[in-house]
Image 1 (cartoon, rainbow, N blue to C red):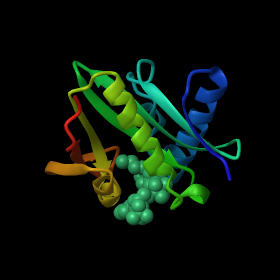
Image 2 (spheres, rainbow, N blue to C red; image 1 turned 180 degrees about the vertical axis):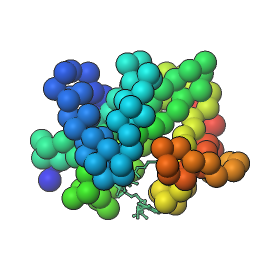
Image 3 (cartoon, protein in one colour; image 1 turned 180 degrees about the horizontal axis):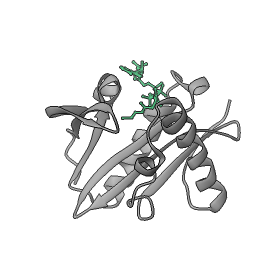
Length: 145
Ligand code: COA
């Protein structure tokens, strides 16, 4: 089985990213579309994972004043538990380093805290609600340049 993880640049790549996120966040998790497609979408770096050529997972990174925020990490249901979510996050961390980010953080859905802990993130602060889902802020511990 072939796994490809790329920075999404073309219209075809971006259509695949949107299709994955529509399926996972809007259909499965009932996130309102107007929250899913926010104003950061245009300037974010998007990552797409394909398994044997088929779109399987996605995520994005937004760098603001040297702080990199990972978000919208989504794996289609049938591809979960195969390391793709972790691979997308590692690619986003690598891009954050390349962009010279001083800090990497994310707002994790509470159920995914253990997933991000395995990647080196630590929860900080209170639990809060976003799009009707409980979240916690998490920070990447490894110093990044
Ligand atoms: N809680 C704790 N650990 C988890 C976990 C969870 N919810 N999901 C995966 N893990 C663990 C795996 O067991 C694996 O551990 P291992 O390295 O010891 O084998 C490791 O984390 C990597 O898992 P991986 O196979 O890469 O996860 P995945 O491809 O299934 O992706 C999500 C995980 C959360 C991205 C995926 O379930 C998903 O898309 N969920 C719906 C959307 C979502 O909630 N996104 C997160 C928004 S913050």
